[in-house]
Amino acid sequence: MYSKNNENAIAFIPARSGSLRVKNKNIMNFYDHPLIAYAIQSAIKSRVFQQIFVITDCNKTADIAEHYGAKVPFMRPKSISGSLSPDIDWLKYTFKKFNKQKIEFDYFAILRTTTPQRKVSLIRDAYKMLRNNKNADSIRAVSLCKEHPGKMWSIKNKFLKPLLTNNKKVEFHAKQYQDLPKFYYQNSSLEFARKYCVTKYYSREGKKILPLVTNDFDGMSIDTKLDVENLKILINKKKIYLPKIGVKKYNLKQTRIYLKSK
View 1 (spheres, rainbow, N blue to C red):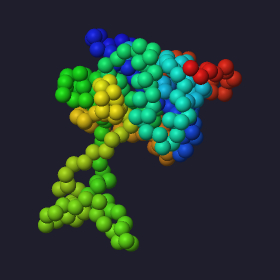
View 2: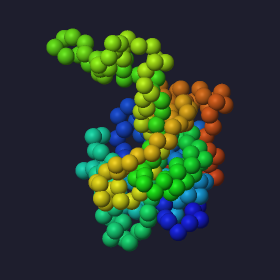
View 3: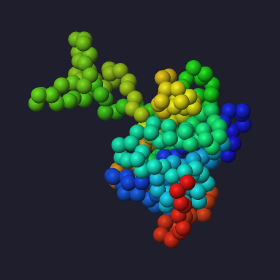
C-alpha cells in the first residue's frame, strides 16, 4: 500500500449519509459489494497511500469501510455533514484532529465513492504529476465540455441572456462547436493536493491547479438513478471495468455491532 519515497500521501474518501437523489448511495449494493468498496480497493491497489481514511457520519458506513481495508479515525459531526456542507469544512476539521493525533502527511487525495470505475493508473499518474511539478498546488480531474457554456443562457427580466459574450463579430452562441474555445468541467474521479492547500489557503485545491483530462468513461459518476443504470450498461457491455475486490463480500443485511463515535 505504501509509496516508495520519503513524502507521505494519504487518501480521503468522504461518505456522508443522507444522499437525496440516490438513497444510501455510498453503501448501496453494486455488483455484490457496497459502492464505497471500489474507492477503497482502488486506493489500496494503487500503492500510493500510507493510509486510507473514510470520513463519514454514519456508523454503518464506518463498519463497511473498515471491512474493506480503510480506517475511520473519528465520526464526522452532523453539523458539517449536511447536503450543503462544503468539503473544506470536513477537511479543516480532519486536519485539526490529525494535528492532535500527530498524523503526518505531505499530500492528500479525495477519492469519491461515486466513481467506482476509477483506474489505479489514474491515481498513480496524478500523484506522479503533482510530485514532479513543484509549482503546482494540486491536480483536479476534468472532462471536456460537450454542453458548451458558450451555448448556454440565463433568463433575466423574462428574456434570454447569453452566459458568455464574445465581444466580436460572431457571438459564441452563433458559432459552430468546432470553432469554440475548449472548456472543461470538474468531475468526481480524482483530486490530489499538497497539505498546505488547506492549512495556508483554506481550500482543497490552492491557487495553481494542474488539469488531469480524463476520457468520457473515467469521468462518469453516480449522482442520479439514471447514472446508476447507464454505468451498469457500460459495465455489462465491457466498455468499462470495476476494480477487483480482494475482500470477502460484506453482507449489507446482516446484523452487526456498529462502531461507536470516535
